[in-house]
Length: 397
Figure 1: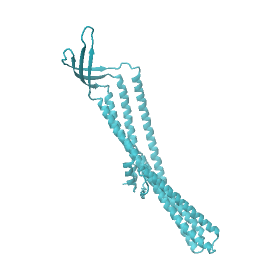
Figure 2: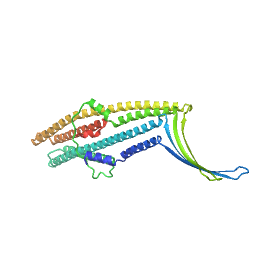
Figure 3: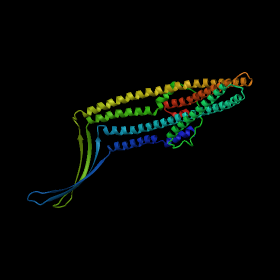
Figure 4: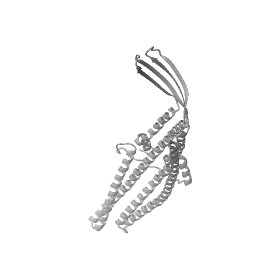
């Protein structure tokens, strides 16, 4: 499975992402509720009464009525609630977009961990096989009396250590595959494998990455929307100090038992209300909304600072990883030359087999350092892309 396929699978199957998507639907329903406050309200009622006055017969009456009303002016409360609900949909979509990018980043991280463990296991297995072959040669020489037992013991120790390293990296590989499978909502890792990723070596400009983060990060854009909602909440609270005006029309029928003749009636009118004094509740609601807005502004600035810190950290880590990649590549070349020299000296009878063992272990260490540096370049490239709000950019193209 390529990393692109893994990301697509996670986007389709991951349950946590599906839960985040439901927030958009919830926000859409909230908008319908808010808009309903600006529409007509229709109600129907009916009653049946029996009355008794001394010296007269019982009197029964029936009545039915239907009425419609609409708020004409709410002190800008309903309009602000509708606007806030619309903004909530936009914020929910941005939250979902951020959740998608976060999931893609989690998949990339798990995938790279598995890939590094797989590459390290290959190095360890190669070293184990080479050391096992050297051990056989030393054992044959020991049986022939051409070398001391301490040399054989040293070869056996090195082979045993290499075997343990291979086993540990294989276990780490399977654990990382399990972590990846969890993100993909897969039950088994039996068919799950990873493919190599081509690193991107271009570092780019730090200021450009910071600008990208400011414009691309969905969570920062969602914060701006939530700040606008905070301003609307103040307007909603202030509506408590303003009058409300509503219009109502209605029609009904009344009938009494003496004649059982239905008498129609109709009415229409305007109603205005103004809460002159509510014990300071409205003022407290306004103050609370203003405090919440201030908190939103502070949170937004804190998030911007945190994002910039993530960008700078990822950028510096990538820069160091690129430097390490060059030095570890050179170290592998030197270690291969050292092993070649040790082998040639041994063939010429000027060296000992233990020099070859030392060179083999040094080469293994150099190769694993190079594997680490290579995958750090890939890893920190994804860190940087995620910090700027578009993890997929780390794939290039």
